[in-house]
Image (cartoon, rainbow, N blue to C red; front, top):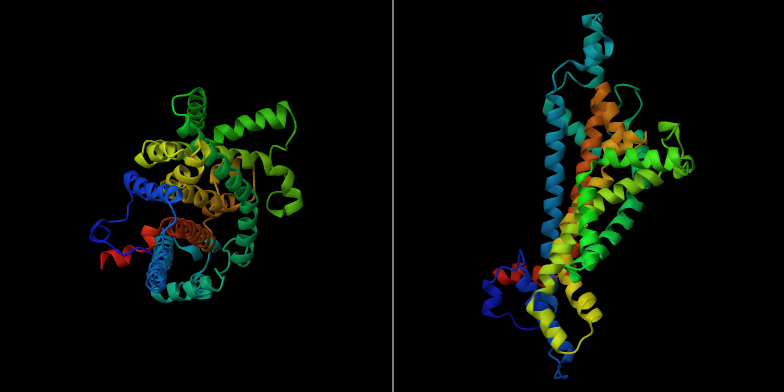
Length: 369
C-alpha cells in the first residue's frame, strides 16, 4: 500500500469526479505496462480498520433511517382523522362497546406506549391484527411480499443486466446508429406510463395473440404454481420501466469516462478496445450508476401499485391499495415499514458495493485525519 501523500489528505474522495476516477484508472493502466519492480510491504491493519469503521457507520445510518421511518409511519397513521373503533362497529355502537373495543385494540393507551409496543412487535415480525379480517398481518404481508418478489427478481436481474450493457454500448458508440436507436427506445419507454405499457401488452399478448393470461383470476388465494404463468407480462412491464432510466445514466457515465485521459493513455499503450472498455472504462462508469440501480431495485421490491392492480396481481402494491380503501391501519403501517426497509437495504448494498470497488472510499476517514 502506497504511503498517504498531502494531496490525498486534502482531496475529498467523495463524490469522485470523472477526472479523479480517470487518474486512478490511468495509474492502473500504467501499472499493467510497467516493468516489474521491487515489491513494497506495508501493514494492512490500518486500512482494514478504516474500512470496518466506514462500514459500521453506513450500517448505523441505515438502522437509524429505518427507525425514523417507523416513527413517521406510525404517527402519520395515528394522525389520520376518524375513530377506528367507531368505523369498525358502525354509527349505532354503544359507548360501552366502543370503550371495550378501544381497550382491546390498545387505543386507550398513551401513543408513545403504543409506538413502543408496536415497534417491538415489528422487530419480531408481529405487526398486529388486521382490522378487516381479524387475522395477523404478518402472514398476509409475507405472502404478498413473496408474490411481489416473483415478478421483481426476474425484472431486476434482466433489467439491470440489459440496461447496463445497453448503456455502455450506447456510450462507447456515441453518435452511431446503435447509440441513436438505444437512446430513442429508452426515451420512448420513459415517456409512456407503466399502466399504458401494461395495457398495450395485454391487448397484444393476451387478447390479439393469446400467449399469456391477462390477469390473475384467483387473486390472493393463488399459489406460486398458479402465479407462474401470469408473471411474464408484469415482469416485462417492470423490466422496461426500470431499464430505461438505468440506460440513460449508464450511457452518460460511460461517455464521461471514455473522454477521460486514462482511456487515451490506455489506447496509446497498445491495449485493445475490449480491454480498455471492459477492464478500465466500465468499472469507473458503473460507480455513479449504482445509486440509480439501487433506487430502481427498491422501487421494484417495494411493489408497484399500478402494475399489480392492472394485472390483478396479489402483491404488496395491491395489498396496500386494498388496505387504504378498507382503512386497515395495521396493514398500512406494516407495508410502509417493509417498503422503507427494502429501500434502505438496497441503498446500503449500493454503498457497500461502491466501497468494494473504490479504494478511496474505504480510506476516507484516514485521509481526513
